[in-house]
Amino acid sequence: MPDHVHFLVQGDSEWSDGRRFIRQGKQYAGYAYSAKYGRKLWQPWGFERVLRNEETSLNVARYIVENPVRAGLAKTVSDYPFVGSELCELKYLIASLPT
Image 1 (cartoon, rainbow, N blue to C red):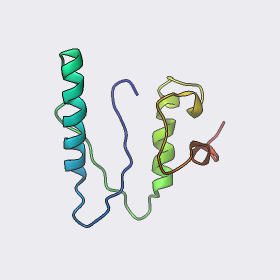
Image 2: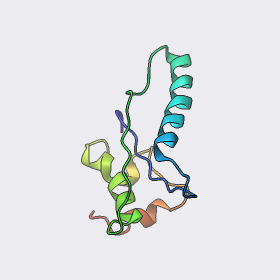
Image 3: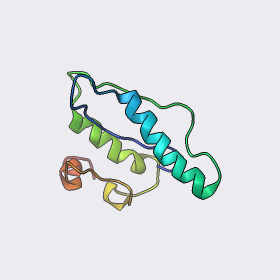
Image 4: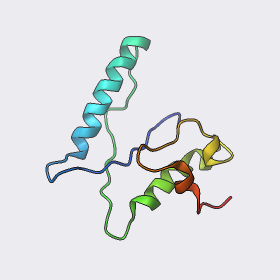
């Protein structure tokens, strides 16, 4: 997405901290971007959402990968160049999506 990014992450321990993850990611990427382009990359806030029992990670992942299609940036999920996962093959995520 040209104006925001989605991550679906899972904490490894009871001490995992989503806000800290967001803050550090924004700091590292923002510093590199600012050094190269001379302007800020991020807004000063982010959004963290904890999944509830009735929600599955797969459904949330599918929602995320469909965002570029809903935004009109691609005709299909696989047409968008900045979509993917290190844990799940894209073809699995889009297997049950409407065509």
